[in-house]
Amino acid sequence: MMPRFTVIAAAVLCLTCLFAAPAAASEARDALENTINQVLTELKKPAMRDPATRQPVLANIERIIKQLFSFDELSMRTVGPKWKSFTPEQKAQFKTAFEDLLRARYLHSMDGYDGEKITYTGETASTKGDKVEIQTVVESDGKAVPVAYRMLKADRWLIYDVIIEGVSLVQNYRSQFQSILDKDDVDTLVRMIRQKTEEIAAGKTGS
Image (cartoon, rainbow, N blue to C red; front, side, top):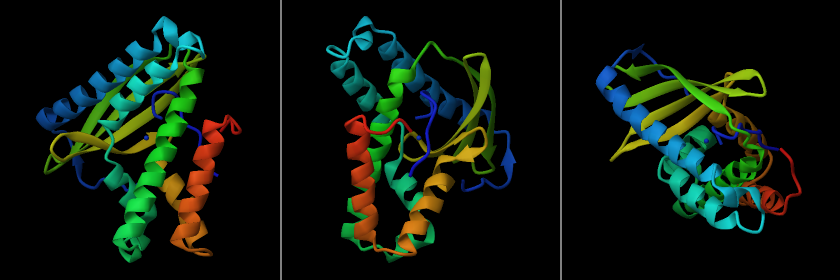
């Protein structure tokens, strides 16, 4: 259960009517690039190389990442139409569990960092300028991996989907969650997400 992410991606509802919107896209890219640069700075710290000293570094990375993702939007889009049938309590429980899972998986992937290089290759925005997709390429082990970040404008620019080699974080999780919800209830889904998070934290999963 759950997909594996590259170290930089960590996060599809297709945007329609995509056109260039330099001003809006520039603000979004600045937010994304600033966050990625902060994460890379933390990853390069000597303390990251030692399991005994890396925890404060990982805590800083977690704080940095949390500021760039819209977990409300990720939760709603990942569940899809069934989200409307969730009670307020179920929505809150799912969001917390899903956020914990994404953070755990992202932090788990930090162990694989090996000086990956990121190149920004393009930007597209909705006609209203309130949604932007920023395309990048991550170079790792001689392989170029396309990673696109879809962002929306709230009080600041936030990520609501990440597409790695054409695979959407939102769509990938949605297909898995819908499969579970077709057979079980919301409580079961939340319990399974929490179990997966615990397995990642315990180092029992490599994916």
